[in-house]
Image (cartoon, rainbow, N blue to C red):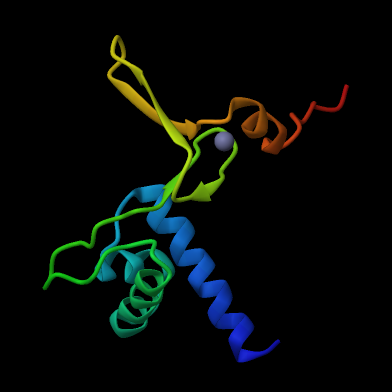
Length: 113
Ligand SMILES: [Zn+2]
């Protein structure tokens, strides 16, 4: 495995975590990935270069531009929709394109009979 592959995997992992938690802070990435604060900051810098998070602002968390669909797991910057269930005080983020989202979802697993 090349070093570039390892780094790319870390970038993917950081992106998934940032999108899932809607939080881009080096201290959080450090904790989630069990890496050094320096490496966590470097990963966030890389996500910033790719346009997924905003620039570092002192010790505050960065702005997050990426989202994750809670139904199919798609991660991206565009074409999301927020469903609000005010009765239960729940808000979920899902793909704006419902049929594409449905196709991306893993097939339901059936317990063995
Ligand atoms: Zn989706």
